[in-house]
Length: 204
Image (cartoon, rainbow, N blue to C red):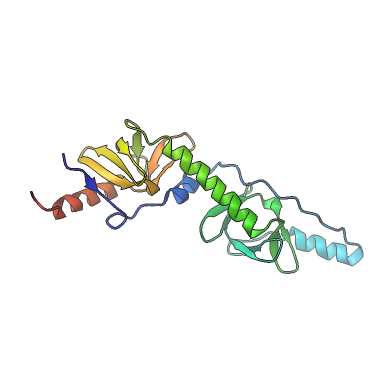
């Protein structure tokens, strides 16, 4: 049986890091860094209180403790403010963001945030790779079962589907909160890509 290798060039897949963000809406935000404030007095206190009560809105830039931009606010929930750092969507506690003369800031450096994000992503990737074993069921973005894992290596995961075996980039795989393995495509997208690859494949 011929195995079709569907790479990034033939199939646009949602990266695992982004998919993990979507698949785990109830994830725990990053711990709030400690902030120290100096109480103000009189009119200054009232002005400061009003400024502090002003929360960031979607699109606002958040700075680090040194005044370096951490990213912009992508979305806001009662539990977390999600920052778009340019490389990741990072949920942080709303209480970790305060008002400064420059704008909204967190009491941590950009290097600290980048290190925390890298560590979190590495742990998530390791957890996903541990699930990519033969016989594991794979679902698409809309929940439909696409097939089962036949094998996996450092770059590709071979999935046995109703149309045959296909090789998908490992970067497109993630797991949801229940541990179910998900690949960043829909059943229709996979079927279309498989049909296209079959048609264009040379006949032997």
